[in-house]
Length: 304
Image: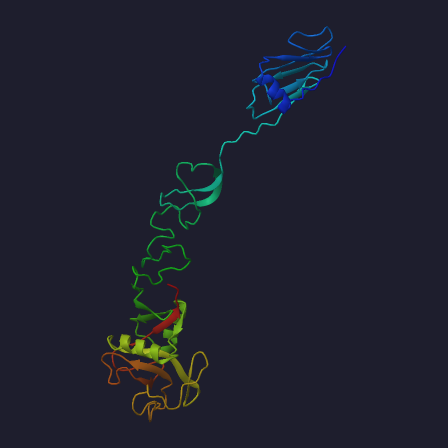
């Protein structure tokens, strides 16, 4: 006849064991020093089995195995078994991106792994994974390529201060481009817009001083973003702000609308070889001036 037994281990049992008992048997007949009853299952407990695994079989048999330091346990009932052990590897998976050009920047769909596979990087920031010289850490060059992956082509950088016929200089959060083209005012405006900016609109004295310092070392004259095409004699910047009627930045007797010609509607600032060096005057929007070339001077937003 089957007997169900449960081994109960207490601090008292530990004390009893320490007094010299080497083993004991719990069975249907009582407690003894060993053996088993005819109908019984036994549980053997010794000094190494405190906290050990206990299993109960289909016949009611109970037996103890294992050691007192066990970190896992299992119980089989009616012939089946389960385990509470959890295998821990220490792995924390991360995303890795194929780096075909070996520049430490990957691209494409990630793979998940504990360690980087060969030829993979820990980011997917490359905008051209077939060109090692194109990545977010690359220097921008004047080559028609977005070298630094910022979605802008041939922008200003320490390595790209002159490109497309324009010298570029930053000032107070703006980027200024001084371009070689000899062109009418309207075409100059288009050139600036293609560069992501406009013809220069002078907003304060610091900006004006910077512009003067640049154009007076360059030959020709330079288009400003101002015209009186809408209202003759009233000049407006292209952002709609009027120029003051009396402004000391105009050259002497300017603007004069070409006196008899009566067709000077756009504004330039005199360059190195201009008789009105560093000053404004009005001139013909199509013909420009007779002092060298009349060139685009552009400004645009700039983030260092």
